[in-house]
Image 1 (cartoon, helix red, strand yellow):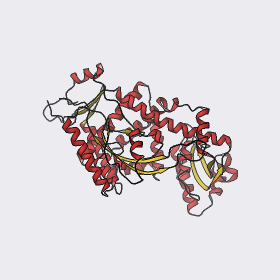
Image 2 (cartoon, rainbow, N blue to C red):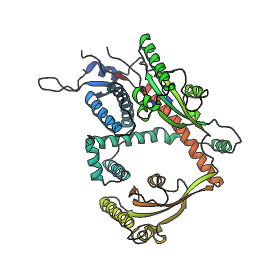
Image 3 (cartoon, rainbow, N blue to C red):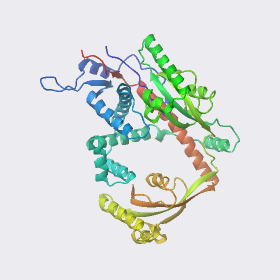
Image 4 (cartoon, rainbow, N blue to C red):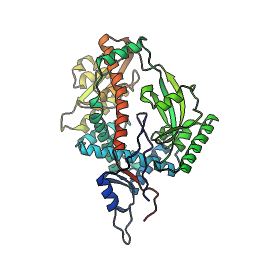
Length: 457
């Protein structure tokens, strides 16, 4: 018998609440009736690639699952302090993530979203830069970890597709009213009260939609046992990595700081009775199973908007026109950085002679800048640098930059800057909530059948 299950996953701290409808779309019913568990013809010497999940009119095969499992295990084994869950548990977690990705990729295809080869190439180049490596060396490192470059490239394209899908379906539809901005600013100045943000860690013991009473009871007992272990002093992150079926298990179940409005109400209710470091004494029943919840910390909601962090920054820019020589620009800046580090000149000296930007005459000095004043690629790297530190080459739509941070300071924000900061904070909260709701609706409208571990018929 084919088992219909719900995903056990957490998206933007919003647990999926609805159950999968009983009636399957016609195309999924047709697929179910027309396909066997193999996507290859059988015969002497032919290896069978079994189907492990049907997702609308698509499938996930055993070979795809095995390949992704190995990639995840390699990544986890390379992280200090991370314990790889048993294969059976990890397999369920990885398959659940693949199912959700497949649902979204199908939606992206319907929306006509396409990522070009050039866009993928630029992203891989930036990943190599972030790792401080030229692209050929970055590729060699990826392949040395047992990941085929074509697979890595395909995964990068999928990730870019999902980001664009979120932008179109969620982020582009977020609006923030002037009233919301005013209320947010007032809350930061103490005129109104906002509940503190919570840092929650959790683990999920899953329960299938069609589980028997005995299976539900067994899951509840397992969750209760994990609570006992955690309250007796076992490391919660280790317990989550080894036992949780949630998508964030490999991070130890840590959700980071979230506004209470962005957390499931059951989490907030449980946390209200806990001190930081305590685990809720009873499992929380959700649509996906039983949750074990630990309160890590509380902090005042968001940050005051009357202060902003300014960064004093310089850069050297080598422009790359469309179709230009990317490699030459990158190599030139890499050579400049080596010369600066070797003491052959200061950053300002090389900016005056090398930079193709209006700031060259000032030694590349852009002055003190506010958040949001530079392109995102530049700002993301700038924010990771300490004063006096120089970045690796950074690609933006203008070309390649070397970035040097000269200093940081907190300054009083003008009324306009306060409004900008408040609008960004409110928009970010609304986006996270809307994204979780949208993902839940997308899943609830999909048809998913899992055939993993089902006997061949």
